[in-house]
Amino acid sequence: MQPLVTPGSQGEAIGRLVVAGLLVAMLPALPFGNYLAYPFFILTTWFHEMGHGLTAMMLGQSFNQLVIFPNGSGFAEYSLGGSTSRLVPAAIAAGGPLAPSVVGALLIVASAHPRAWRPVLWLVLAAILVSTLIWVRSATGWWALLVVAGVLGLVAWRGSPSVDRFTLQFLGLLAVYSGFGDWRYLFTQQVTMNGQTILSDTGAIAAAIGPPYWFWAGVILAASAIMVGAALRYALADKRLRPPPPKPPANVLQFRR
Image (cartoon, rainbow, N blue to C red; front, side):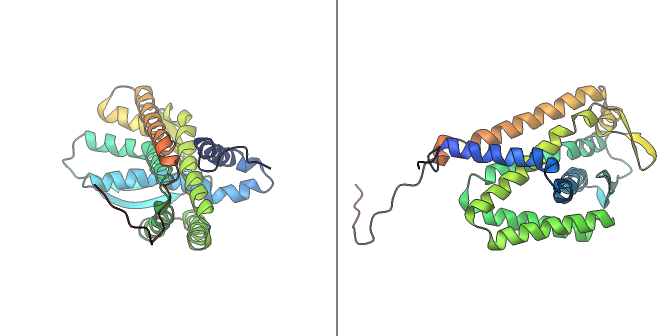
């Protein structure tokens, strides 16, 4: 029986991404899917909150802790210097909702390079473990992130190349899905978290530098769409899907002119 698509073709690559996307979207609806998906649901919060914290650090501020609640909400606590520009808190607020799309785009790009599959999985595993040790300060964050780290470690250690690639695609699309799935949150000025009413990320940006929060929601979604679209175009380019030319036998001399 002939395969439906040619191995290594663009059709196969698209099919693999579609399967990964369907798994991301439908996992909660499968038997025990909610339990299987829960640690990865917490991982998407980690993407978001680490975006806030790392942005704060890159701008010379202090990243104090990351807290994740059992319902999947969370916050990154950071400290601002006394003379910081209004652009700094605005950039930190934007770093959270942009982070899932940035991470997702990078993982999709990495999935196009076989030599990067296993090293990138180890890199993600290390990032989860280091951040959990340094910043995570909640029981939910600890156990759920350690479960994800264990799964990634098992895949990176014992998984076949196809499983490595699929895991990267799954994580990338999971991050992308979570980023765009927060569109209602982005178009909200205030939210209630742990019994307190606070500004949303886009509300915080608007409060720091204006214009209104819905403007920044559109900017963030547009920037995310551009990043993810560019990553998919890169990963699915024909020149990256063609198999490498066969190597000549070792006993054949090659002369170049």
